[in-house]
Length: 218
Image 1 (cartoon, rainbow, N blue to C red):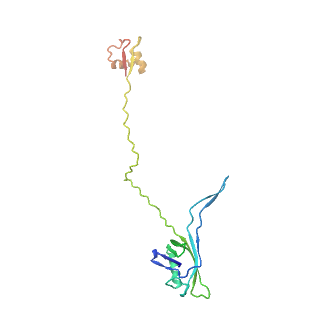
Image 2: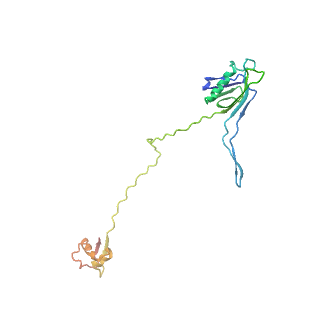
Image 3: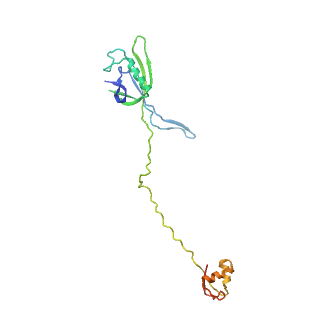
């Protein structure tokens, strides 16, 4: 046997719809989009379907009769008050539909509610209601732990400093015709600096030098 239930707080507050609707409509439209691209024409992108929408019509009877499917019947204003209260408080409602191949047990939002009272049926309240499936969502909190040891980090070993290379000692091999003055002029840019060459090479008499001697250049 078909049963339809509306309620909140996981069944703590709700009711079974007293009169089952003649039909219940399910709308599961897609969210695909089309675009016109130059030199290509119309193309489409496939997206996830939109949220399921359910709609149906029935009525809340004032009196008990064979058409009432619930064991307990409340006054029509009790049902209407509850539904309006849930909407005012922005409550999610649980809609349960059993006894059908289309069994449903999900959270929904009440998108619309229309109420009608017909002449000759005083006290009975007709209604149409539209529900949309609710999908919970929340921003995810990302926690960065600076103290966490990340073993996957690449370890870069510092290269040892290069040894400081001492500049090679400049030398000059004396050839015939050389003088300390000319050697100083050549290497030091000033012939008057010949005493520096004489000192570093322990030359006692700068005027006496011989071919083949090797002098250090400061």
